Image (cartoon, rainbow, N blue to C red; front, top):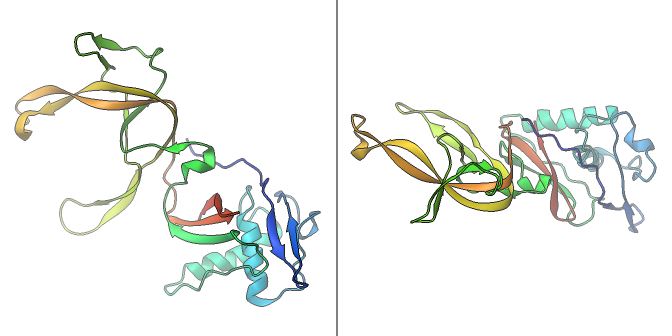
Length: 240
């Protein structure tokens, strides 16, 4: 299931104007609107060069509908992506009008922070969704251990991983990332294992599985990403 961010910007971005007076503007950038005409948007008409470009980039990246959802955003964002794609990329532009804690930063990560969805990062290991009192479990009363059916869980890498090829050089980036909420407890799941790595002697082993009330699996996206910070916190991540 591909995750899309649907929250609208509810936090104010603060800008310092040419008169050095601090003015805060709360804005909503809608896909069909010109951001320069939206009530409450800062006027950047008096700015030129990289300063203007940096402010346009920050405003457009912060749009929950997408960085190029507004027509006026396409030229500055296209310029940004082209610039960052060069063999020797340019310096990421900054907005001199942005208040403290409001900026954008590039990084390499194929997943989003779970905090954007109001969830927590899941630990590495086997996970499953449900409530313990609603799952079909078997119990070893002597050991007070609960078991689930084989194949009930999914493995979580906890983020992106580099997978080298078995022979030669090279590999690829991938992995999994789950976001969770409401830890229920740990159960055990049977799986087939082999004694001393000998495939001639299969046996049954048991692995721990953490159960959460909610588990949300992210799709792997482009590693080229930009985080938009508002008031010092990540507001959204743009993959391009």
